[in-house]
Length: 458
Image 1 (tube, rainbow, N blue to C red):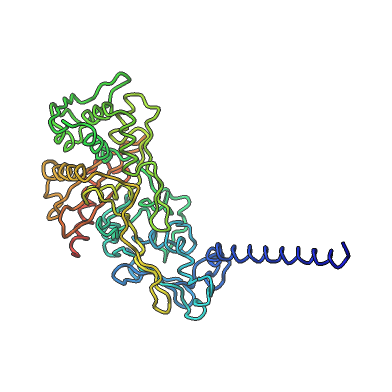
Image 2: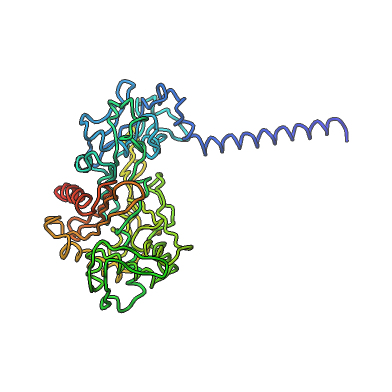
């Protein structure tokens, strides 16, 4: 082989290496360019590590929630709206990792593969994002929660639009407290409890056990249960919240009888309960658009009989995410069809072109038979009519289930999950008020205030 040929081979190798390297660089730029553009070192977008120049964020009515002006990030003029929408909008430093300003930072910067952040320099702003949230409803939810830690969520179970998503504790982004790190009142302040929180669900989980019973026990409606204040198993007792005497299934559900549901849980067994829980989305990872949602978990694989009884009433190690529980309510309300929640309604370029629209999509993580869903809707409506009282939720034609979730340290968490059966107000609601005691007394009242605000706009 002469020297000319050797040199040609070496040249070919260099050319090939250059092409491979160029291809890798282009691919990396394509795959990671949006992430690189959103880095805090990008001075077109950030100033001193905080968002300064970006598109605006609006609620469903066009109310500005966050926007840039003169190189500074500004928020709504109402303090209550700023605080109530903080976890949805996010902070300027991305401590709230699930906020729009963090998750959709590249979209807000106006980045695209061809032009980079040219539009940001040309128009002085990036893409605008409109949320499905109603800022005034979020304000009502925030004020109803008061000083309690917790969350409230409401969505349209036919379209998937989230109308309300509030998490507390919160703070005013225009006047951030300096003592949050040492003040227990702000514990978990950067966590959006609706999206990222998991809680012991208490008796709200009885809706899952009830669905399993409807699927597997043909004579369920005619069954009788004798409640003496506890249900005895060979490994211990499940304590009830009252002595209910002899009750049928509907009455047991109305009165949230632990004895009856512990008996049903043990009769159904680990496999059937787990199968139903997973059919309803437990142990499955979900998301809201680009935003990951904390996974609800149900694991009774190593339980003794008494633990299985406790798990079936929403205790033991069972954990539920509020957004997930709200979606289950939507599936029941919707005749078994579970519509996936979303909260980004649209993304619009500075030139006015809509580049992304929220869509109504059926989620594949929840499957529920139409007949079972309709029967559950009747039982949940019965809870309100025969036990909670329609006057507790005036005009809403409410269906619901309360929960008083016992925890190891502190007072029980107060839960309410439910939905309006009125065809003109197709909304499902979830409320968790931490360390607030009885479900109906706290979470039920908060849910009513928020649902009244939502349905009043119809």
